[in-house]
Image (cartoon, rainbow over all chains, first blue to last red; front, top):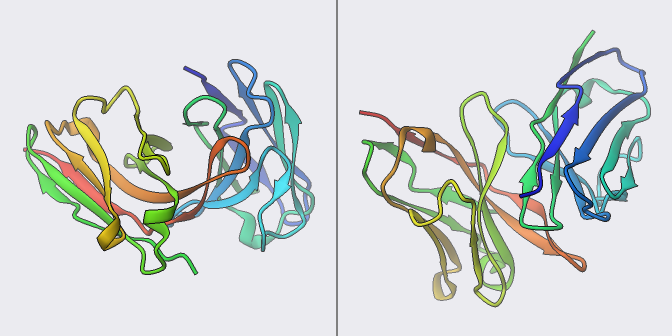
Length: 106
Length: 120
């Protein structure tokens, strides 16, 4: 089974900050990786798929990069609406989510 | 617009059974990869099961042999039959549409979730 490990688990940041979240896979997943945003009590929302493709309607301040086993989600300038929990998900072999990264107000 | 609506959750004793449903009026269920993902209270997302367009089915090890995913195309409805429920199955259960751009799947549309509580 492929394990996904996100870091950090919690991130404190201010509006306007550049934020980077890392996701590591236990084996190569090529670029079969997605990123989701989840707000409390709500369903997850797809942000990025295939490691770097921006889902339609998602603001361009979100970007994804990486291949193989190491991936990053970057928010170029954090906005008030971005405080949430973020999950990576691999789909190279079955489907596995990372444990999540909570982005909170500093 | 895809609008997935889950139902069927509730309070059930350990060892009991429940059947969850997920319906979309836009005929999403019958034409797509569909999945169930759950989230235990205060925890992260856990993939549970997926059905492909060829009706191939896949399960997480934690539910294999106890849960069954299926769909009724005439009703455009996805199901998750859950048997031999355990306390650790307590979670919000989401249905989601899977998209494949060469590899199945990332999940682009999600329902609002239905709560399953397993407790005596």
